[in-house]
Amino acid sequence: MLALEGVSFAYARGAEELFGGLSHVFTPGVVTAVTGPSGRGKSTLLYVLGLMLTPSQGRVLLGGEAVSAAPDAVRARVRAHRIGFVFQDAALDPTRTVLDSVIEPALYAGWRLGDARARGSGLLEQMGVSARAGHRPGEISGGQAQRVAVCRALVTDPVVVLADEPTGNLDRDNAAGVLAALSAAAGGADQAAESADKGAGSGPDRGTSEGRTVVIATHDPFVLDHADEVLAL
Amino acid sequence: MRWVLVVREAAATAWASKVPSALVGLLVAVMCAATIATVGRTAAAEQQLTDRLDEAGSRVLAVADARGEGLLPATVVDQASTLSTVERGVGTLIPVDVVNGVIGQGGTRVPAWGVHGDLTAVADLQAGRWPGQGEAIVTDTAMTQLGMADPFGWVALASTSEVDDWSVVGTFTPRDPFGDYAAGVLYVAPADQPVDTLQVVLTDASAAQVTQASVLALVDPPTPDAVTITSPVSLADLQAQVTGDLAAFGATLLLGVLGGGALLVAIVVLADVLVRRKDLGRRRALGATRATIITLVIGRTLAPAILGAALGVAAGLALAARLGQDNIPPADFTTGTATLALIAATTAAIPPALYAATRDPVRILRTP
Ligand SMILES: Nc1ncnc2c1ncn2[C@@H]1O[C@H](COP(=O)(O)OP(=O)(O)O)[C@@H](O)[C@H]1O
Ligand SMILES: [Mg+2]
Image (cartoon, rainbow over the protein chains, first blue to last red):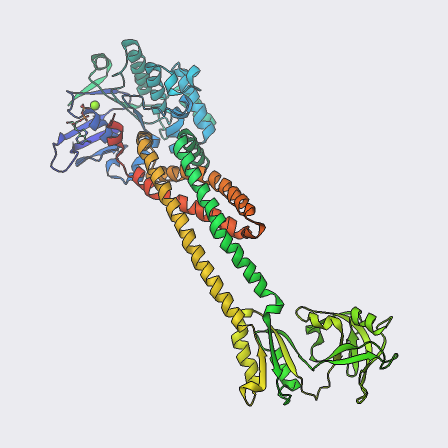
């Protein structure tokens, strides 16, 4: 379970304080849309939840632990094992194949290459982009790239998925596809994860199938319409 | 992250950014080739000098009783031979001429040396046995000259006024540096007769100074000119001086080449890290630790550096060989150079790696 406890954040000492001591519990299995005007701190909040920025006040709890206060190496490990990221521009490595991009977090999480590949291929299959597994990001469309990014966010079967304007650069159809994928991810462990679990010794951290916490920073009305919960900043 | 996968990622990164990788490889290759072709030559020269000075001929200390005052009794020879800096030693008498005893005074004369001490210090026995008192051994050359078919018989002093003779009991070849004895006969000197010359072979040319002092203390000449000394002391001094100069010159050159090369490698890697900061920021966001980033940056440097070192060593050796066979440095110098160049490249990659690992990934990801 992911929670914010009285969180404020400032980019520099004396700079504008964002969030003003925000507390919020993100329920597993629920898609939460974080919204608000541009510059209000939607992206910043996601980075705080993703343990890349440390709150100036308050803390971020994950599974009851104050992970925001942990040392850098621990936070990196939490990111690798328990948090998945989707960036606005897919941020795939242009020099590597789609499958190599998808399995990247699994490598940082210490998975074997074979296990990571099996899991990544399964996700690409589910997302309907398995035909592109051997291509480079320059050879696929924006919609496909964002779906690949969703696969990458899910590869370690994380408890939390954070997406920053994932539909910002997409047309309606592609946006709907990506949102559907994120909603499905909130629903619980997917088939690929289950089959990978059986085969692989290096299992994911999540024991139960209560669903993932999905947080989407967005100002896309389409996403807001379909989110289970809206957190306005 | 598993080690094999770190290596795989580092190699993939090195392959992806080909220009910086090629530059790193080239720099390390030049470092190795330049070192081998320049410093390697001094190392080769130093090696030759050392080899030459190590030859037994460069390690002989000889003390002669200049006026025949009996300053070199058998005991002095025995004591000098057992000094810790002495490998072996003997005392010899002034050579006399001998002839085949069967032929008599008309026969061909060959030189004969009376030796006190361990004969194995100067000769290797080929046939027969070592001589005792009143016995002698001969070389094949001397045997032919004396007109002996086998190393048996006897030799007599080639003199009309004195009479002395020795039974021949074997043949020998002289040991380095006593090649002079190849022309003649060695006989066992009477134990009660002081020798004319004391010759010792030192364990190391650099021990000449101390050994000379110890030997003179044993001999205890009444005046300094009572003995004449032939010593490798000045040779040892020369060696120390020359190798010292060469080593200092080589070290300075090596430091310059490696230091300059490392600086350029650091600049190339830093440029690569700056160009690929988005890549590194993404890795951090996706869960790579700082240690992983540092390892990846060092690994992506080391991969082309290893290739460069191999090419550079090959090129350097080829260059040295073209300049002459004598310029090829010893093998341990070559492997040492490659290792040092790789250490220098690795060290050079550390500051850019630290820089990359400590950047704020959020700031990087937000920069379009
Ligand atoms: N690296 C930074 N340093 C200082 N201020 C920043 C930095 N990044 C963003 N900001 C500021 O923080 C505020 C929130 O930014 P952001 O989280 O991107 O908002 P949103 O995603 O809601 O548009 C903005 O006022 C922005 O100018
Ligand atoms: Mg934003």
